[in-house]
Amino acid sequence: MENNCIVEPTTANIQRAADVLRAGKLIGMPTETVYGLAANALDASAVAAVFQAKGRPATNPLVVHIASSDRLADVCDLALLESMRGSIEKLAGFWPGPLTLVLPKSASIPPIVTAGRPTVAVRVPFHPVALALLQCCDLPLAAPSANRSNYVSPTSAEHVRQGLADHVALILEGGICERGLESTIVSLVESPPHLLRYGALPAEEIAEALQVPLDELLRPEATSGRQVGDGDQAPGLSPEHYAPLTPLLFLSEYDWSNPPPQIGLIAFRTLAEDSRRFAVIEQVSDSNNVYEIGQRLFAALWRLDQLELDLILIDTCEETGLGRAIMDRLRRATFRARVSRTSS
Ligand code: AMP
Ligand code: MG
Image 1 (spheres, helix red, strand yellow):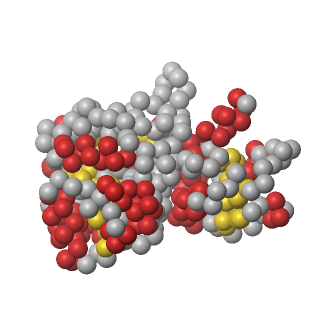
Image 2: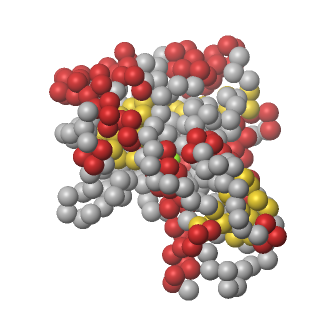
């Protein structure tokens, strides 16, 4: 695909994107969380192309995007949804926004979208280009993050081009993603509701809106002591995910006894560390501001991963609010390097 596959989101180009989607092809779609690789969710072969382009296991279901909660009937079984109406109403203020709800699926959604599950993950995105596209094409769009499976998620159109240009008909330019972290996933098919993945909407805000204690919303699997995102209920959240190719480790855990020559640092605050230790420093925030860190984290990983460094070290932040999602992503992103270090 030529370099100019990124197009401005003019009315004509949104119409073109909608035509391409109706024809069963894929596009890059901006959202406020990360860029999505979008396909018509009602077209099983278009959805199969999404799995193929990403190298995504067929066991890992996709999030389906709709234009507004009025369109839930397009993707959900309304009769089964009835008992969840109270929770949906309590959460209504978060849509459009970075909240994905797991709900009973309608028969119109092909099984490939949900990896054979009876439930579907649904979201109304906040980004004006995504909303304009959803309205224009008048279809539910299955759109996982537009990256190769397990690699760092894309927060710019250019990231999508670098990773998936050969697989998309076009990429709609939507600027840098405002939130920069994936949506928070909450299952309403369990009672009380259960948070399956930390994300751009803080768990605390969801617990408050639902009027359930935070511990209950985050409850670990009863017997195994598993944490959010480790269970079978959010398949695809493997311990290794969001990872750059360059080894990535936490600065706080790094043993400086035998450092390689080229080390990059991603800092969340002005650090006391000796800057001469690092070939490059990416300062995503000066003050541990979780909104700045969330927005810039994946872009910093993309950038440093292109510099052929021997190692990237990364800061940590407090695990409350958005910090839960940031540390969740970083534990998965550092997983491979941490495991190979302890086993070598
Ligand atoms: P991504 O599209 O890369 O943000 O990943 C979407 C994630 O949504 C998957 O990895 C699953 O963890 C979760 N998900 C999607 N559909 C379902 C479902 N029906 N039930 C539970 N989790 C789901
Ligand atoms: Mg993803």
